[in-house]
Length: 216
Image 1 (cartoon, rainbow, N blue to C red):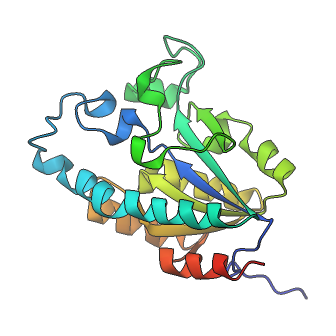
Image 2 (cartoon, one colour):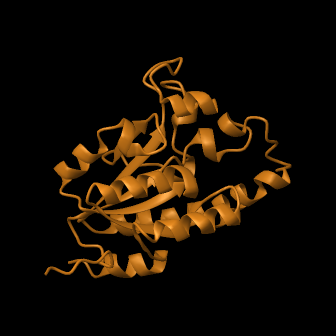
């Protein structure tokens, strides 16, 4: 009987780095979802998120972007929330109930300055928590020959976890990088990582950089 494992190192030509929702609407105080947040006086209930984003998530994603871009054999794919319409009538019922709205072409859809995509990297707008439910990302990844996904971004226990679960069910080998994700609290982050161990391997940034350095 065949033996299966999630503990497979990243392989050149088979993997993609997925950067999830690190955009103006969600990641910048005073804008979008955090429009009422004073950037000079972050309230306690948002401090964990913005501190984690600045000190861990963004630097970790930048390191992974640099590693993926340093050698051929890895794709970089950005996902971000943006409606196909100005009024968001096309987005999921869940987003409508939550009150999320990033109209087509709005500044909130733009990736933050620190993590800007390169011209030939793939960008996929979505209107649901899991990118696999409202886009053609699976079709795109299959065309690229991708079978391994490295998941990063925000928020750990929402859009990241949703993508991890769906990717695993669709037959991708998934790697989650704890330092490259953040949530609204340490408890949310840790509980989500505990759950995702059932769908993915959990690796540090340094471990993945070492794997990529082994590529030809």
